Length: 601
Image 1: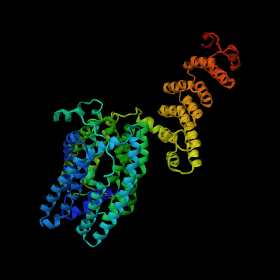
Image 2: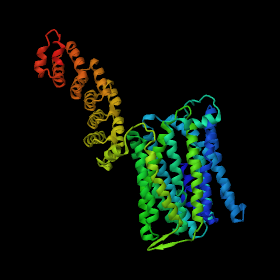
Image 3: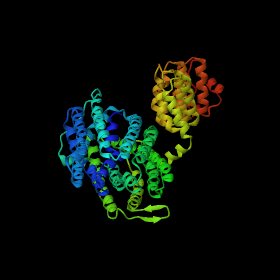
Image 4: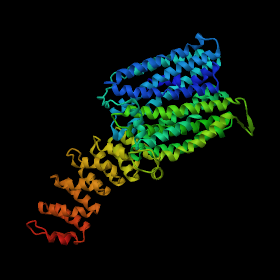
């Protein structure tokens, strides 16, 4: 949250674009900067090899990052060092190349370190929480940057304004790295020594990982054809004031902040594949807005604000989905090299070529305009339309991405549209964050009434709530939702003597009725807790699975408690055609021996 000020003040969008245009940068220059920023991902390969040999990643990562952020001071020195416009721009391009190379050198180290820290079953959800917090800080930093640059633009002092703003960003960026000193680093599992090309080729030979690589390669080519030019289009083509452009672009961050927790839950519950595909579909329409929205302030201000907020929401889904696929599909021992290889070949090479093509196409006739009503069409629009057409091809490719959940995008969308998402997300938040026990219990009960699969992970977490009524409500809600994903957690609550929710957990497992749920219930028949046994017997009856008949018959021989015997008889009555409960009781002799087994088949 501290370090995001560095990116907001120095790297991202409007401030740097405005600074470079003031120094004389063209659309092709921006294409070169974007292309080189993609090409330097080759340094992730070097990082992967280096990380494989490091006993500790943290000290090396911190050193590289501090040098990387301090290097940006040379960009600010360009107006002082050079008078010629082209020399200034090429100096900046060269410095940014080294700057970005160091950033890529650090990326696999950090990602492999963070992946070792996060629990696999909630990785996406926790990453979503982090993304929301960081994006909230980025929104604040972007607003500050907008007003600072806007103030200096009015006095025609863009270079001075950006120099001051970026200097503060550099200080914040270095402070961010120092804050990682107390963050622990788990033991690093290093792979066995291998030849360079064999290590690089390993992710490409991995049949499970290969579809993800193909998708990344195609998507980054299609996306980067237009992505570097959206802000340039606003400032250079639409002549949008820098304050307006920066505030409008903040909409992307707001959307990302709002949607990050939602997409984190989607990735954990439904898998990364639906999150990526659904985000891609919606992003087609948001990018189309850059073509259809006319350069009329009364129209483009509200329109761009809305579509960029929506685009930010979809960016969150893409970011969490792709990151989740990358981390979950790669083996722990060689994760850094997997990350580095796919990023270099997909993000690096594909992202290097397409911005050059887009920038060259725009620079072929930068002043050409075709008037169509209120629209002023130019080559920016041609590049955007070409990118949209190419992006459509990424949707079917995303359907082959490996995912830890095998749920289709259609089923996911149907399930999400079945409930009031706003209410569900609000209830999930209340269940997680409210300090009032009654409020949390009501939220869990209401989620049980709505039965949203999206809430399963939150309700599973509520099984560990300090309040017994909340745990009780959560167990009952999981049973009403009836998803097998809750089986292991409910089984754990069933055998935990401290949970206090044995009966609702047993009934919930009975509602789920899966093989694992049945096995957990049958295992619980040996427990001495009478309340837990009663709930388990009732739950077994609810499953309707005849596999429970023999264990219940055996149990009848072992118990003398009349209430338990009546419950067993009622359960057997539901599971077989041996007659009503009282008739089944009569079939058992007073000494506990059973009637012939054929009577229960």
